[in-house]
Amino acid sequence: MSQETGPLVALTGATGFLGRALVQELAAKGCRVRILVRSFPFHAQLSPCRLELVPGDLDDKAALQRLTSDADAVVHLAGAIKGSARRLMHINGQGTRHIVAAWRENSPKARFINVSSMTAREPHLSAYAASKKAAEDAVTSIDADWLVVRPSAVYGPWDTETLSIFKAAHLPIHPMLNGDHARLSLIHVVDAARALAALCDERPKEPVLELCDGAPKGYSWPQIVQAACTASNTKARPVSVPPGLVITAAILNAKLARLCGKVSIFDEGKAREILHPDWATYPRHRIPQTIWTPEITLEKGFEQTTKWYQDAGWL
Image (tube, rainbow, N blue to C red):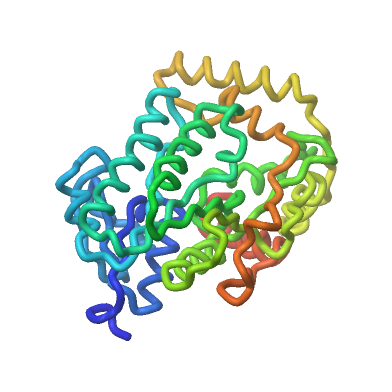
């Protein structure tokens, strides 16, 4: 199927880490891809793809109408991951309401996929979590063909947010920011993109889904540290960091960032997210294997990602 005749998928957040991987996956499937952009996407991952560009943002009603017009599927990936509670709620909550309104007006028969976050399960933890729950509410209140997809922690080449895990593998000791009992699910960006692309075509019974690799119960921090050290050919020396110290460090880091005129993702709310004991996927929210199955294990994914970081000079 050629890009000219394939189904039209409209994306927000296409220039982000997961968005770029999804664009590549959709293009490989023969889909026509239309993306909302604030500037021309010069990123190396997007340069080979044939794209229809719609200049604008989530506050631009006309741009959202052009984006969603005649689409077969709309995938909403855009969002803010740091900032004040007001900014997060505006971009993630109000922004989602804007794209939902455009979808309902222009392509009401299209499937709408809202890419959310596992943190939406615990909106009390942080302003970010509350904003993602508000975004979900904007979608789930509509009687239409929608899906809410909550990826677990996404990692892989080009990612700057999980880079610290791989950098820490080269330290003399390896800090664990939560106890041995805590569980964290992960997924490689390629597997996450494959899942979202599959959901543009297939409709599972469960409307709220969670993405993870082949370990639905997630991983302990010692397992994550060991996998990162194995991929880096270093000896794992895990050291638990007391929860109080994690919170204090986050508060000080956020204050220092503000003094420097910056906004840091590592604030008190993010610390509470990190310290939450259960980020494993819920069985009822897993994608049926008839639709999608993950292919990249933690060991394989960490090995490949480490090599990419090294080759790119990030490590």
